[in-house]
Image (tube, rainbow, N blue to C red; front, side, top):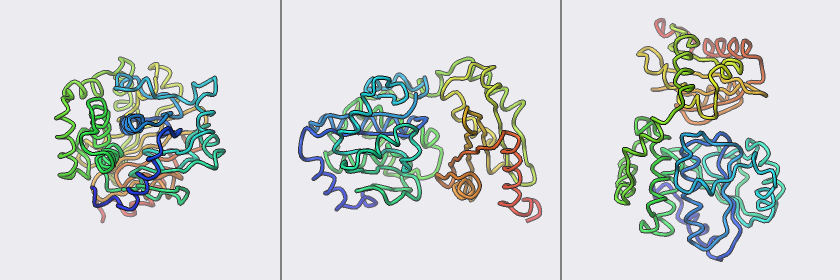
Length: 346
């Protein structure tokens, strides 16, 4: 991993962080997941150790099953900041770090606050494709399995392995674990497992972390999952595609909370013949589109082409401002166009 990070960029980062007492903002993406929270809070902790005043923020509330994480009390939720403290801090910031995303315009109300500060240097640390050329410095490594793994390598490069303490190890492990599907997705390099070994050496309780993340759901989520798979999963058999759609009314029936649908889109991929899965989740203003795939199917291309989104080859997302029936109709037509002849006829 370190060979993927430009040494001159690391030196410039160290130079920018050298003056102590700077006001620094660390921002992660909307609907923050384990990687967003883990990488942001671990990076915040290092910056505080270096003598800086740090505000770590996300646009909206994180899932309840991540609320146990170390340092989470230092994570501000912009939407719930009625006093405007986060916006005022952003306005005075000297440096703004953008972690686990690369499109500032997708941060809800935080986008305007960040755009208004024209004096702060902006630094990107991310593993998603095609970052815009708006950053003063960027560590964009699409081959990194998670932003937490990327942050781990940057921490080690600028502060040494000894800088990773117990809390940071726990945070980084959550990010690495969740963004790799519990170490089952692609980009599982020997360097990743070496990093995990270092985190384990800090004494973190890996079985307990796994239990907190994957076995701490509400009854409503489990019942919603059963309903989604039994009643709402549709298979486009000739194309090896599947999709699940959930409306606002359906979500309310199961007392939906933020994060309750996390991972649903992956379940259809357990079917032998399915190589692409989609999830359509209705919100107040639009339909959130989640896409997953396996093998050669590139959902990043699919998301960019049909749903104004993007992401990774096997994990991407987008939005639809159509109704749910229209969105599904658009998806079905897109699948037919994208895959061409049905799989059995190729």
